[in-house]
Amino acid sequence: MKLPETSEWVLHAAAVIAQLPSGATVSAAQLSEHFGVPGPYLSKQLAKLVRSGILTGSTGPRGGFRLARIPERISILDLVAAVDGAADPYVCRELRQQGRGAARPEDCTQPCALAAVMRDAHEAWRESLSAVSLADIVAGLPAGVVDKNRRLLG
Image (cartoon, one colour):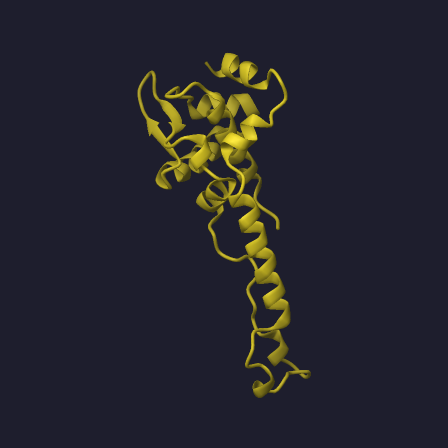
């Protein structure tokens, strides 16, 4: 499974936002500077998190982004699906029924064995990501990271 680079940005940004005191906001510009990533692209991804109900955003001098719900209720799968979609990345095009070596239609009444394996792998991946919350990520950070991020973004 290969995700776009912007997915990594979103995962890290959400993890940092989860480290802030409850109700605190951080701007896209602050996050972009914090991680050294392009602000306009990060802003587009954060807007997807707002549309999906993971973040709330406000404008103005004290505006910015904050979590829309507690970190325990936001899974890594929620974040990935919000920015990259939830569709299975493997699309079976029934290659087994094409070309010189095409299988007979009556031999293709069940899903392709490869498609079934890929679907199972995708489901296992989704289950794994849904089992980890932002709170779990923050709890596993090395000592001092939360204080450092709060100081830099506060």
